[in-house]
Length: 206
Image (cartoon, helix red, strand yellow):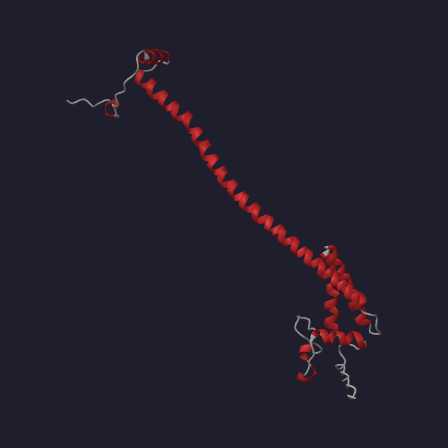
């Protein structure tokens, strides 16, 4: 009857050449650990692999850190450009606010309370833009929209109303600038008929 081979007989074998004195050292350590020389060698090899694993993990973490550093540097550059763009918009908004406020301040008061309130709103909005306090401009802009709806310049949904310059008959259409100028200069309500232009006649040539 054939005997079954031991499990160790089916395992891989590898002949190792040991330097002088190392075999005796391994034998002493194996005896102290109460195991065979083969088990001692295998155990020490496995322990060396376990020690090298953390260093490999450290290398992986260092590589990941380098990748994260590159991403952070790229994001930092984008943030710097965004800050520069925000500063540019802030400067433009300040200039626009100063222009809006000074323009409204130069318009003389009229008998039209709507026109006077609009100029007051423009001063408030311009001052808010100049100081960078945009939240303070929200109520003023809301009131401006309410006036536009009340005077039928705009519909509640934001579309042009019957008194909007674009809604006038073709012969009476005027630009936004001329329309606003006429309302402010004449003191007429926007809901009234368009202001007639006065044609200036040239003096006869001598």
